[in-house]
Length: 70
Ligand code: SF4
Image (cartoon, rainbow, N blue to C red; front, top):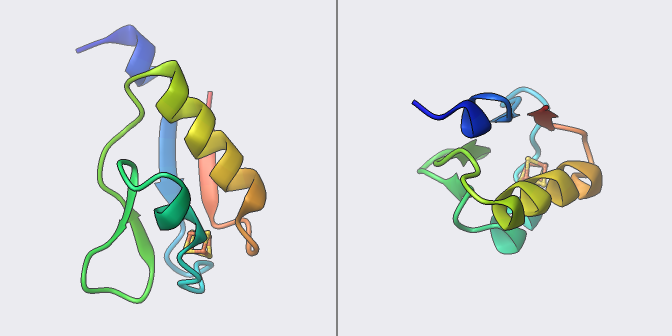
């Protein structure tokens, strides 16, 4: 277990997600549609770049469904 990745947790609130696909298009290594109408987190960020992408997606998400905890 790594402290670095433990400190940052990305999640999608399925009740808030409208399935616009923006986060999946922006960070396809983190977010994915898995047969649902909402995006899911398939992997926690492991690099600064992935974390930055997840944070950017959380700011751009039209419904604020993406939560990134530091
Ligand atoms: Fe859902 Fe937000 Fe991702 Fe759009 S950007 S698919 S609303 S979590």
